[in-house]
Image 1 (tube, helix red, strand yellow):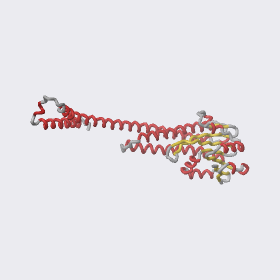
Image 2 (cartoon, one colour; image 1 turned 90 degrees about the vertical axis):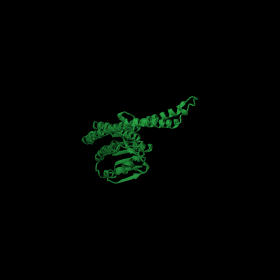
Image 3 (cartoon, helix red, strand yellow; image 1 turned 45 degrees about the horizontal axis):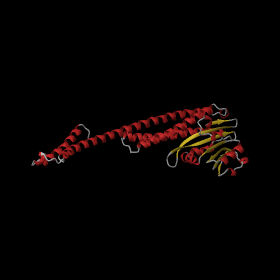
Image 4 (cartoon, helix red, strand yellow; image 1 turned 30 degrees about the vertical axis):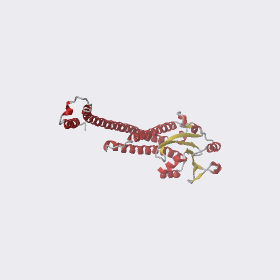
Length: 317
């Protein structure tokens, strides 16, 4: 799927590059969803784009996230988002800016998520008159998105903290929930660090001298720094919750062990008495007593009750 925003503010979609005519395209943005090698080859032939960054984006080198030459500046951003199963995953987002226009490459799932979450903001893109304004919009959109997804996770962590620390209630799978939130927070943190590195490199790039967006990008970097502090706070709060839940589980286990100890003592003494008089020795004088049976029963009952009273006074129960 190809979505194109023309300079006259009109937009249209095409299913394949074979439907497009380069001579008739006067565009600001050309977005490729679930792009194929044939799409990249067509762009390379008609617009001279360099896709090196898209072939090595999983490498750790910074050149795999930002790469420029005299005709283009290419960016790779990792975008964490919630898929249809409400599980956070990350997808690559590639932006290539040239004098001709801006090219976007991403998956259809991520694009659908953006359109569902930010319909008004996506539509506002059509009202931007210049290419530099669209380029600026992309930076602002990514920064705002990280703020939104971090805020969303922070609300979930806060609600979980309220349930555990204030209401003092939590389900049996609360540790799994904490681990899930911690993993989501980690994905956001990693993606945010990559984005910060890319924007800092862009400020120093030759391409920035023509775009003149340095002050805008610096403002977005300041926002990302604040977001990073919130992410770290989420890590700290999740660690506190994990420790709190672990302590509560330990207390509950200690209480269970105490109960088992009380039950064991209360049962073992009557069992001991019954075992003694079940030995069947020939000479056992108590067996011939007229009141031997009730006496032993009373002794067994007392041996069960007295430990119970003792542990009750020790506040084990």
